[in-house]
Length: 176
Image (cartoon, rainbow, N blue to C red):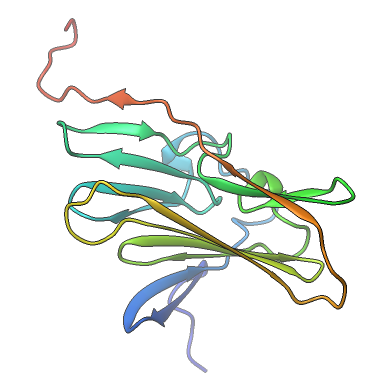
């Protein structure tokens, strides 16, 4: 018997590099809360832009090109998530507020990327957000939908992003 390294998930290897597969549901009845201190987060990215990935499936974007600013804060409203609407009107997705019932999705944190993978009734959703290595201020989102059921599916996929820049003035006094 080898005890787990963490109660939240385990280390995996992806493309020859280590990544952490977060499998916890944050505990029964636990609300991740709006405050950053109440949530499990990790910054991944490059020398220019970082994803502030949260265990609830949302994310924020931190930009260092012009002195430091949040392009968007990761919050409980669903920043940086995918939503799938089935033909019957049922909605589910990659953010905690829309997770399919049952097992929580696997959220994997890599060196420059963050992925959420969930499944509902034979339809799989893999959503990877990445920042290419180097100093490119790019954020790329790749979404894969896979139907493993025996019937055709008609769905609509929607990306949700709230872009509200917030500048950080490190050298200013309180009145400024």
